[in-house]
Image 1 (cartoon, rainbow over the protein chains, first blue to last red):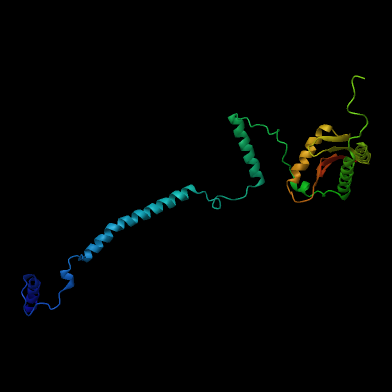
Image 2 (cartoon, rainbow over the protein chains, first blue to last red):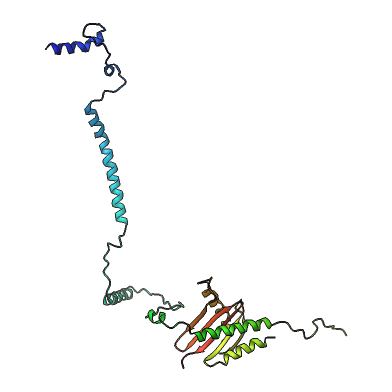
Length: 166
Length: 91
């Protein structure tokens, strides 16, 4: 009880300015320094509580970005990637042709194209390379032609300047 | 003058299996044509040779061989001259 009293007394002690046997010799720096905010532990909770919604906002924004990105990305690897069988190609080609006919769309002819699709490219790609005979033939012809062309020059046959009045 | 050029073309044209030959200058203008070769194709032949050379510019001038079931056309550029030989391969 006495202890309690003494503490109560202590609070008012320094404020009253009386110096007695119970007066602190050293000044309590915390109680005197009013600049330092004495934050209660509840305040910390409140501070965190106020910052917590901010954090979830950020989190939800990130989640939203993630979802939006996921919606915009086409993951080719995850798509149905089973190889089409030959008959499936035929079926689809028939179905598409029917649709085009039904729609009355005229597909432009590609006859103007110089290069054409070849049915079995491996056959053409596996053909024999240029034979040595052919190579020799054209090289010889061109060698001769180049030499022959060097011989081509203007032959002087008659005077270019001709007197009209003679 | 151009006798040697004519002779070269004649010699080639008289070779067995060859049905025509043509020579063009660097600009694709016809220098001479013998046999079954049109002078009109000189420019096209020169253009083909130039385009194919662009595939591998550092390699020596390529010999281009165009072929169908019955005929073959060989094209090459050498210096300022582009030559083409038409061969019959149906035999």
